[in-house]
Image (tube, rainbow, N blue to C red; front, side, top):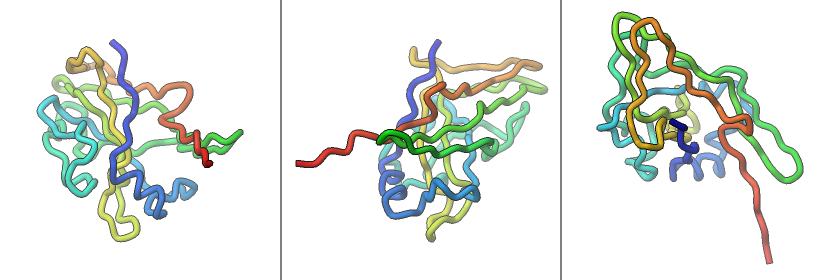
Length: 158
């Protein structure tokens, strides 16, 4: 089963435009968190666009810590009119039970420009859609596309 594309939250577009998400700044504190099928995580216009608006995150157990994991090797590159955001894969190891999720969310685990924990983007982890599960002792890897998490391009004017 293939994970879906990363979709940017509506508020994140404004956060990019107004500098709340200064993607060249290594201290954004970006994290990835996992959410259940009963979550509102895929609602791109959720609340005010902050982590606190989301419902039904995976419980703090079985190898998962509430709030998720920090992203590593974050890269924001500019080339040929395209800007790309990329990072390393995120991996959880199930311990004492299964880790089950439907959505992965990237957000800033910080207060940026007065906004507490702004949301960046969300991915449906299985496009069937179905839950993804890592059973006890196994890993759940959120593999980032070779082209990055997302790209920005295509600005035209008349």
